[in-house]
Image (cartoon, rainbow, N blue to C red):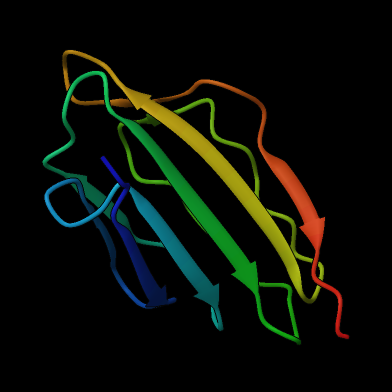
Length: 106
């Protein structure tokens, strides 16, 4: 089974809907202070990929129900990837440390 990917621009609010995707790729063009999650399925592995635009410095506030998530890298062009597993209460728990990378321009 392939994982469904949903690409979004940062907006208020961001909604992580487990019926629509397991992977969210979000281009950060502004701060996101409000985010929600819904329809998370127990035992499913979810990934959030937050990509700063060329200006960077954008904040992201994780939704309530997301635990142990890292602060995102504000560096212009950086990418923060956080993985989660949903528990029986449909909450998301980071199952490993987030990764941070810097995009390179060819």
